[in-house]
Image (cartoon, rainbow, N blue to C red; front, side, top):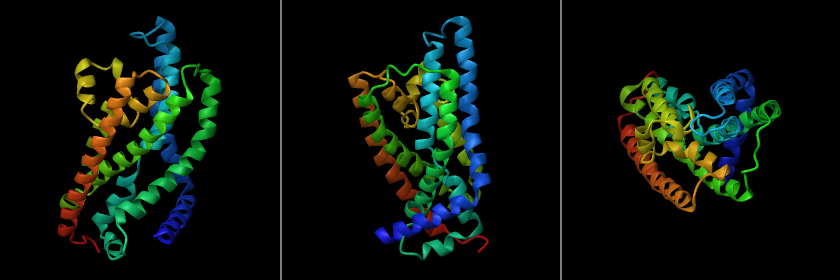
Length: 265
C-alpha cells in the first residue's frame, strides 16, 4: 500500500506542477476575500477605535491566521472529482484496487495544498510587514492544540465535500449544490467576520455545525481566546462530526456507485 501511495503522490505532484497558471488563479481566488475583509475591518476599527470590542489588531491577527487555517482545512474535491462522474472517466478508477476518492482524490488535494502553501508563504510575510500585527497572545500551547484540530477539520471537510460531490451519482451535475454547501460553510465558519460579531442566532446555530472547526475555532485556539471548557467542547465536536462525516460519506458513496451508469463513457 505504501508503494501505491508513493506512486499516487508522484503522479499528482507532477500533475500539479503542469498547471501552474491554474494553481496561481486558485491561490488568488482564496486570498482575495480574506485580504479584502482584513483591509476593510481594520480601516473601520482604526476610525472608530473598535468594533464591538474588536480592535484593528484583533481583526488583523484574526484574518492573518484565517489565511493559514483556510489553506489547511479547505479542499478542491468538487473540482478534481465531480467531473469524473459526469463524463464517465470514473469508470477506469473503479476497477483499480484502491478507493478513487479516499486515495487518488485525497492525495491530489494534499499535493495541491502543498503547492499553494509555497505560494502563500511569501504573500503572508508581505502582509505581515504591511499590517504589523501584534501576535503576543499566540502561544506554543495554542498552536499545538490547533494543529490536530486543523488536520481533523481538513479530513472532515474533505469527507463532507466528497459526500456532496458524490450526489452527482444521482444528479450528474452537482456544482450548484456544492456552491450552496460552500455558501453555508462560509457563513458559519467565521470567514466573513469572527462569529462573535454575527447575530446571536447565527452563533447559536454554528455551535451545532462542523463549519466553525474549519476556521473560527482553530483561530481562537491559536490566539489564546478559548477557555478550557470551550477547548474540550471543540475537540468533542470535532470527534463527533468526524464520525458523522465518515458515516455519511460511506452511505452516499456506497449507494451512489450502485446507481453509476458511466455517463459519457
